[in-house]
Image (cartoon, rainbow, N blue to C red; front, side, top):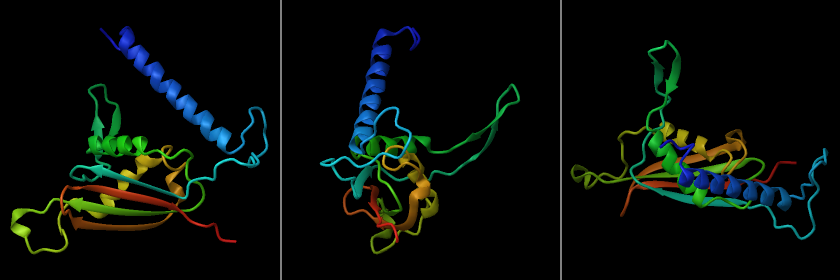
Length: 182
């Protein structure tokens, strides 16, 4: 039975779509959006202030989000193959579960800490000088678009480090809204 004819899958799809629509309407109402108005929305008195900080922890061994290579299908078409998309999906799921009420606006600063599990041979090592590369782990921030921020081009400052985990490996992400300069 395909997903299109499966009533349970159709009902789950409708529930996800309805939840997404409700969240979109709630975000629009929080900033004073009126349907049909073309000019920029004016803040509503008594509306909750936009969040300034968002944090999330993604459990599991962090993977790099390398772009990968071009794959060719038997019909000759080419498409980019991204490696470790399951890690990106895990980051997206954790971000969706901790989603802020409203998307962060303006310039953003991001702090990322990669917690690696300590190998038995590196009992005294302080820093994990191992793969994955830190810059490739930061590519997982792309999945935060639309969940935490409107566009990852809003990120103007990044602080990142790799450490050995005291208990469990994972990825700690903190996004902070910066004051716009005058």
